[in-house]
Every structure is written in C-alpha cells, then in structure tokens.
Length: 345
Ligand SMILES: NC(=O)c1ccc[n+]([C@@H]2O[C@H](COP(=O)([O-])OP(=O)(O)OC[C@H]3O[C@@H](n4cnc5c(N)ncnc54)[C@H](O)[C@@H]3O)[C@@H](O)[C@H]2O)c1
Image (cartoon, rainbow, N blue to C red; front, side, top):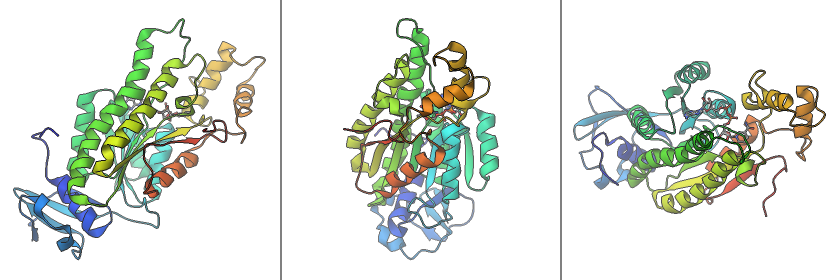
C-alpha cells in the first residue's frame, strides 16, 4: 500500500477497539485532554489491554488525539455498524440507508445529488447519518469521500456500492458516449470505491483481528442474464460480478468480504415509476409493450414475468444485506433477489 500523507492513525485505533470490544465504534478527532495514552505505534499495542475500557474515552496516539464513542445498538449483528451507501439520495439507496439507520447503524449518504443527500440525511436524522457529495466515477472525488469518512468516524464496517444508471439502447444505434457513461458509473466506479474504501478497511484490519467487514455491490438480475437492447447496462453489471469475485479473493486477507446483490426490477422506485422520466412512461410512449394503453398495462406486463408477481422492494434488498453481513462464511457471491425470475444453476 502506498503511504498517503493524509492518512491518520484513526483506522488503526478503530481496529484496536473493534478487536478488543467486538463491537463497532466511532473514532473522531478531539481537542479534549486524553485519559489514555497509547503511543504512536498502534501496531505494537495488544488489543486485549483495552477490553475493559469504558466508552466514551479520549485516547492519544503520537500527535493525534481521538474520542472513541459507542454507536447505538439493537439486536442484529449489523446493528451499530458504520456504513456507506452510494447513490443514497433516492431509490434503492435511500431505502437501504433508512433500513440501516433503523438497525442502529451510522450511515453516510453519498450521492452526486448534493441536495438530495442532505435532505435524506436530515430526514433520517443528523445524529446517525452524514451526507457526502460525490461522483463515484471520479477518482479524486471518491478519494475525498474516503478521507472524509476517516475524519468523521475513523473507519467503516460496511460499504454499499449502490449508485448506478441505466442507458438502454440497441447495440446498432447506441452512442458510444452513453455506453461509456454506463460503464464508468456501474463498473469503473465500483473499482474506485473498493480501491479507496478498501484501503481504509485494510488499514483498520491491521489491528482489528477477527472483525469482518463488508463491501456489497448492488448489482442487478441483468448481471446474471442478458438484457435485450440494454447491453451497456447488462455488460457493466456482468463485469461487476467479475470484480466482486476478484476483489473477494484479494481482500479476504484483510478481513473484508465482498459480495453482490442482484435485485429484480424495483417497480415502485423512481427509476421505473417517475411520472415524467420513469421507464414505465418511456416504454408506454415507445410502444415497447405491444397493446399497452396505460402505465398500469406496462407494469402488469413486467410483473407477469416474475413468478412471485411483484417487483423487488427496499426490504427485499435489505434482508439480503443483513444475510451477507451476518454470514461470516461467504464471500465472492452474487445473491439474486428476484422473486424467482432468475434462478442460479
Ligand atoms: N431500479 C431497478 O429496477 C433496479 C433493479 C436492479 C438493480 N438496480 C440497481 O440498484 C442501484 C440503484 O438503482 P435505483 O433504481 O435506486 O436508481 P435511482 O436512479 O433511483 O437512484 C440512483 C442514485 O444514484 C445517484 N447517482 C447517479 N450517478 C451517480 C454518480 N456518478 N455518483 C454518485 N451518485 C450517483 C443518483 O443521483 C441517485 O440518487 C443501481 O446500481 C441499479 O443498477 C436497480
């Protein structure tokens, strides 16, 4: 790993407390006087010497001083974790952020839509969320997000790479620019997010021992089967599964599990149901569904493709997230959540 001058001791300190207390914590810089001095070399500290420390506590390490705080917790294993949701301002991302906050997580809501991220953070509670403006397809922006996270909570437990776009179109007609944009946001961005947040997770792991963390890509059923006149999307999502498997193989030594969730269509979300720009309206106007006269006809046509006769919802995806985080013996998987529309073989 290359040493960056912006790196702090916070992930190592957080790792020590994760290891000692087997619970998530928030580590943030403070001007308060330290009551615990750990020295500058945190790699040489035995975590077990911290197992009876009561939180909150103010700790100094070299020139840096941090307050270590307990997050609120409920019953689930996922409870209290520090999580990032990219594309958290609306759609699946907003549902995931809401569900995680309800489970007692501290959630970064990161989105290109700054106003949307701020509004969602206020709605879900400023104490347990933090908005970040980011373009996940831009490396500088992702690096800045990663530094902001390190500054505010010292580290992280769960990264949900959810931001994505659809640019549907025939391979015979689609502009290369639309194809590239889709590839940048759905595929390259997952690499960038894993590179920078994976860096924080692996530094934290240097002192956190058996504490497992997660990177989850919100993929799609279109990452498992082809999608007609939608190759830019399906290709980027298929590629995402290759990244998931490869990152999983590499990051396992840093205690990071990497998995994908492949949901079916979220018909009630804005991507499909927005009254002006949603796919239902677009498909009605373009005559994609033969004989459809209303948005309801188009919706019925798509729901009929699903054995369970409905689209995916936020809670369906959240349950998959809970499973992946709580499961300590699985990595590199692509988990379909499709009401039976896509079955693995
Ligand atoms: N909606 C579906 O039917 C469906 C089905 C399967 C999988 N998915 C996947 O779920 C994820 C979320 O989809 P959705 O339907 O909620 O989408 P959405 O369009 O409702 O929301 C996507 C969010 O991502 C943000 N975003 C877009 N580009 C960004 C960028 N470059 N940087 C940061 N943020 C950015 C947008 O501002 C928006 O808030 C995507 O990865 C998508 O492929 C969606």
